[in-house]
Amino acid sequence: MIVRPATMADLPALLALAHSAGTGLTTLPADAVRLRHRLEWAEKTFAGEAERADADYLFVLEAENGQAVGICALAGAVGMREPWYNYRLGLFVAASKNLGINQHMPTLFLGNDMTGHSELCSLFLHADHRSGLNGRLLSKARFLFLAEFREQFGDKVIAEMRGYSDEEGVSPFWEGLGRHFFKMDFADADYLTGLGNKTFIAELMPKFPLPTCLLPETARSAIGRVHPNTEPALGMLKAEGFDHKDYIDIFDGGPLIECATGDIRAVRDSQVLQLSIGTTGEQAVPYLIHNRQFANCRITAAPARVAAGTLIVDAHTAISLGLSAGDSVRAVSLAVPARQLAAA
Image (cartoon, helix red, strand yellow):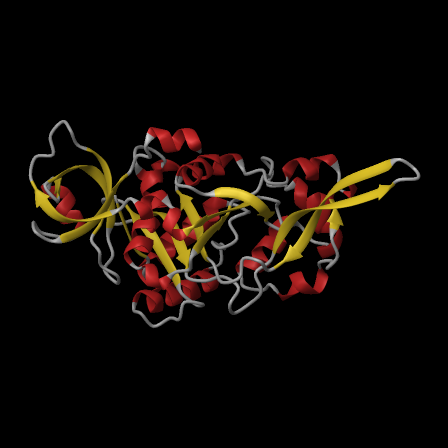
């Protein structure tokens, strides 16, 4: 499997992926016109023709037959062209000494605090390919690209994780809050956002803090909770250094996680090495490997070992990366050290 930039030729495969993803994956709408537009911007981005505010680094996971079976993306900077909304979790304290009452009420503040940060988005892998190293490759490949081209990204990276919804696609957070202001189903609001129509958020959402005690228990319990299918991705990102602090998605209540770019494990620990082709041996472990190219970026996960400043891989891996012995690569161990897993 190889992670590479998406092209217009991937449109049919991406449309099929979008349909299989269901609701909640806002940046991958099941709309051919919108996806075509996004692919056009992705091609401009990898051609170096997009400013950071517009940059959309859209990648696909390519199977051996050339078919795109997964998707992931990096946004250069969010909120620079149109508002980027989140709820910030806060606290309202009300006290009356005479009555002996002291109330601490969690609240939701609508804001744009994440403006300018880079974003991990659009992660989805077809169910038939959720095995082996595929999921970790697709999720973490972006970190090597980010490490190689740091100047294209912000000092902080964020990710909005898909919030909890039931088997019918119903979001209890939306039902308890958003529906009252938008008067539409969650899927419809999510679809409009995916099409780039975000002005209705500012027009309809209340600007004052919302005490969560006014929400039904089902909505409160969904705050900061991820969709069951998203739990593995959340675990991987937490192991890389991401953490949920004070922000959630305004539609489904899913957590927004964040990490300083330089503190992401795969960014911080990646090395530039010379490629060597040979027998990897029993000491080989899975590595993420990037060919250090921009427009022709190719990233894979394969058994490898480091020796005397070189990364030893087999011939098939080198061919997949489009490289020869002696070429330069950026690599990092795919596995997170046990001490960091314990901390996560």
